[in-house]
Amino acid sequence: MLFRILRESFLRRKRRKLIAVTAITLGAGIATGLLSVAVNIGDKINRELKRYGANLILLPQEDTLPLEIAGVDYSPLLANGYLDEADLPKIKETFWRHNIVGFAPELQTRATLIMPNSFGEIVTLIGAWFDKALPLQEQPDFRTGLHHVASYWKVRGNWARDDSQREAMIGAEIARRLQVRVGDSLVIEISGQRETFLVRGIVTTGGAEEQQIFAPLAAVQQLLNLPGKIKKVLVSALTNPEDDFARKPIEQMSREEYDRWYCTPYVGSIALQLREALPGSEARVVRQVAEGEGALLRKISLLMFLIALAIFCTSILGVTSTMTTTVLERRKEVGIFRALGAESHQISSVFLGEALVMGVLGGVLGAGLGYLIAQLISWQVFGERLAYNPLLLPIAIVIALLIATLGSLLPLRKAFSFDPIVTLHSA
Image 1: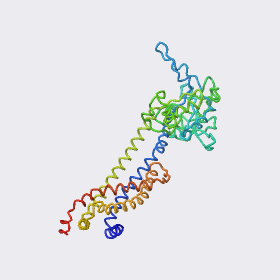
Image 2: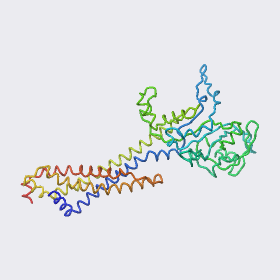
Image 3: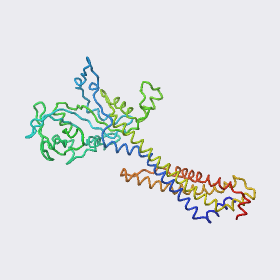
Image 4: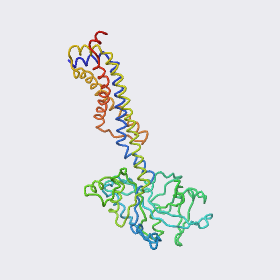
């Protein structure tokens, strides 16, 4: 009997049902699409943010030891430690190796610029990897360097090549001051030893890099007679936003808490694993970058949740409006049910049955719409497609059923308030 009533209701009131299903589909689709993006947005935004610099720096331990005598800081006098370039592949052997987007070793020194209009200017020369091929067991085609860690740099010309000993990149401020252009030659002197570099690119960053010169790491190691040595490593890692638990001192954690912290990609836990992987190193967290990433992720996730909630509530109002109109149109039918002795739950089963059917239909359609919305957002914002999530369909159906059910509660109360005598008499 219930099935027959539902069938007749859908056949006779197609327009009303279509409006309700449309509202449910839009609500479930938009909410599901935004939630799908929100679930996947963390890694994507993290990868985008990694273009703007490293969030971890590896330094020699002796360079980080504090030394203060009579209130005077003598730490810079101890800054003569080095890390071994041969240990760098160990960075990709840690527990969170897949979260390491890239790293760039650097060897920094002061050098004299020998040019007609430089007047023996002292500049900072940095040896670094630019786009270094580093075949790994799990990633045979892995490449890393400044081109990956600091891809936000604006380079006029080309990046220097790692396999060239005589190519360099120069900061935009030095290039402007000395009128250096791409293709010019630079003569650099270190401890009486001169070397000529070809300018491959001019770097614009808006930071200190515009006052520096960058050359292949091997070339600077040779000039300093420090084969295989590096001064620091810039590391870019995908991390979870830090919460109160992540900031808790390790010594105050229980064994279970420590295991949970260690096995979560917090920037602090990744820093600890890097220290363990590279002997004699100390990992420093770039707090400004790490905290900025976490704050941005939280704000974007909250914004998407609020938008989804607003769409959810709007869809409920749409269903409520449609169902209220339907109940008013069917008040004679409700009056007959009541006159025949139908209980409230029997009457509600008719309307809730309709809501259930519309919810399932709207959920299936909403899952497809949500998938398209998620793909559109991901493509427009990140330039890549989202992988299909099999949970999308059940989530959309659950959201649609909630919209249909909550949207039917107020009309049901209206239906229960009808007096069968008055209703039938007025009909």
